[in-house]
Image 1 (cartoon, rainbow, N blue to C red):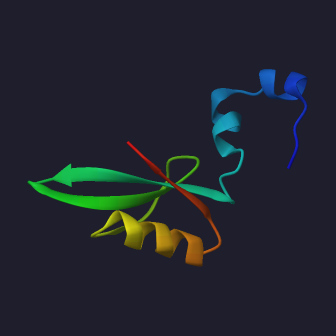
Image 2: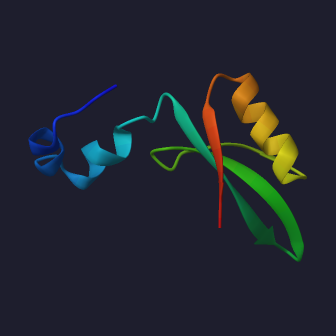
Image 3: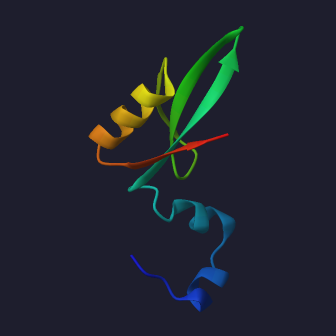
Length: 72
């Protein structure tokens, strides 16, 4: 989906965060209680799931029709 730059400049941070939220996800390593899991988040920050490996998390996200990215 293409957006005009002038339109994007007038979006609130919340509205900007919703762009792509139904299409994109990101995977991030999260350490809790000494264990690392790879959590899957929608573009708007909502947690969608977690897996034990980055590869598994990316596969799960893509199997659910998300364009998935690994982030630090």
